[in-house]
Length: 497
Image (cartoon, rainbow, N blue to C red):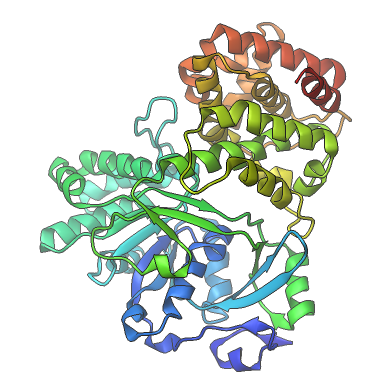
């Protein structure tokens, strides 16, 4: 067994690719907030490829990871023990396995340890891009209204503390304070690059940071609005959270003792607007698609892939399933998902340059059905109150506007409301995880006396919940779920076409 470190790279199994560059020569150029499994399977992997390109000019794009949440201390410790290296193992739908060690993270900072060090790194002139995977809820932007309405403690503390000279605690606080330092020094600002699964993620990041800055210093907000670039992007790679079983697999298959490897599917996609304040890596040379407008690709992914995750997960969990691949290899659920994609989501999409939507949907079902990934349904629906409004409700809204079908989407919303009650069709206990869980439970509790009350939760549904056609479909779907269970309800919708 080989403990992963810089010193042991040459001792690893020859099947494992290792960094093809001198890590000691790499200099930081990107700071990333939120170093979870997805970033390490996606953004950090693409930077690793950039660093391996011929030429010394790429050495200035090393990554500095930043964790701001208490749970990020575990990532600090894991990466610190192995020179910030980790193993990325990908598996194709047909079972082909590939392993490589990623070396692009040259530094990791845990903000609670030393917020001053984080602020100094973000504000350093060498930092030309600050990227983010802080989840849908990390920006504090209300999905229904588009307004900045932060609720997390760190962001609220920064709004109170930064004007008085306190050090930041939140990603938005660090970014704003660092941009203030750049402005005051007359320096070029860095690009803010969101890599979260949000429609118009660059626009959302811009809204959040401008609103945050406005409360601190209106002149700063004006400067950020004029000088800082916020490119939109579409990111895609199914990446479950790392388990002990996966650690054991990496150990047994490749002989690597890695505290926190990442296992993901082989598929990868990153469509990125070419709009940067202070240069960028040559992403186009390592598989990233640079475009002028990312929206068609973004809507395709959010409404087909991400919304399908919501569709399969609530219904699958109610029906007693655990894994994505089990639901998607079930002919009944497969037909339901394909029906959602083609009959409800696809009509809301504009043509996507270079993409065959039929082939894309078929590829999604192959990816979903991959046994090797062992992605759980429960992972897909953490903070559903953040995901449903971004992935599924835009489809519902557009279908209502055009008179299109909503039977499948309404059943998914009804299944979500039943899931919030915490009991599956077989009586087993379910465990919703949502930052708005108390509000969701209170809304569902009113359903017994006032059917459709769940849709009145304005923070989630906005004005959509008052639509008579949606309410009728939701109430009927919820009644069928209660009467016959998820599987039969799905069968009825599929049979109705």
